[in-house]
Image (cartoon, rainbow over all chains, first blue to last red):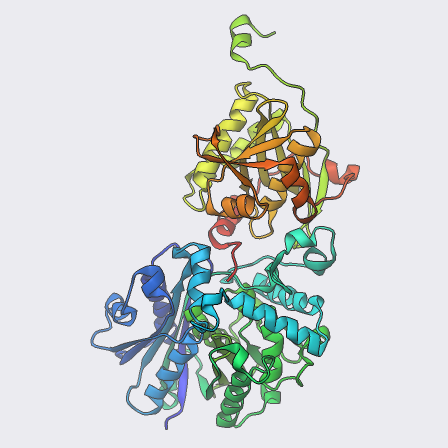
Length: 394
Length: 229
């Protein structure tokens, strides 16, 4: 198997797209291709990550459409739908294609345009992830699952609403520094929880989760260009290696898990990714975790092995996960502030880590030249998870 | 001196109690002063509102155009018993709400325009408007329509309001909903916030109204949404 490098990255502004899904994806892809400086080389294949285009944008076969838009014929084209883990799934498939020797130059692009439909519809379409007969028909939504998960977690491990708010405060502060983030508004503990207007500012969504515990509904697109590491020197930018990939699944219906507070698929996917990269959690210098809800950043940071189970919130209290802390988590603002265009998120996490490892993250650059990065892309409610370890190339 | 013809064109006026200013701590930690605007401030507000009447997002165009006309009508004495409240952060205009008294018992809610998005400024200001009608103007009910889905969620669903479709609301006859005293006081602890009195220094800082940066405002409107998954 060949080593695979990320040789180019690109991303649109997150938030509300003024353009069609395809135009957004073309913009991110064009940025990645330009970033790499591919010259006369042909892109062999395009993998597109998306969850809702057929329903929300009335567009099917978007990988083929993107090839056409970018004039990349006769490149192979596949669209990958794996819920909110579509992004990392597409990166994984691109990685496998290059690693196997099937292709030399692969474009992976994630894109989602959720705001083409109203917010009731976007919540509804994300709820299609749930078990149709055990969850969906009873009105289960992702916020409701996260609310129940948070309640159990708080009861068992002593987390408080303040800990959840600390995740939001940290990630919003990071988002302010990221000019492509969806929400660039700082928030405070007083404004969210302890001040006189907190209940109005930050109302319940799914108790104990409040408004600012939930990610926004975002449009956005990101892209990476993959090539064999051996060819990486032929491109403009310093390479970032995909050193480890792990994927694991879990029960579809959350109540079927022996312990619903265990995110087993996060743990197993992370272990596989670390084993493949021959690294330990302690070797990671920056992480992008799937904080669709604030509780998930804390739980995933434990399952990935960065902190003992039930102690992620203590690391948060000590400031270890801030930019400048021992392990900065979500310096981009994460899903919470950078935004969560669902099918795109996994690709955007890889783009953010690549920028960090290249030292190009600008105002939210993690100090001391990070060498290793780690991402968790969380599908469903933890029933399909992909973990990725990136290494700065030489 | 009002000439005879002008006097005939002007509507009669009911006595209206003033709205006492309050302060609201936003999620960002910023303090927003909510206070009554005077007719003298209309011209400044019109300047800020006008560019948004071309913004085809979240019904900003229709809300801005109608609010522009309503405030102009107030300034030129062509709307009866109108009032306007503003939200001001560090002197900068963050949002505008307005309405009028239909008669002593009934109020009409006109518009809510948020210039600073993502911090529930509009929700705070709409609540202040309802507070004004029920608690200070002493009215029994307020007739309300929503022009945007965000407004429908914030007013009709969040309070929740009752249907009163038999009323012809002034905003084009769209189906009218109603906030009663009973609904208001049930929702008050949840939705109506703010601290009084406002210190003289804080209140003084809310004059004169400073123009929000148009480009920042437009970026916020384009990119900030209030809904969550």
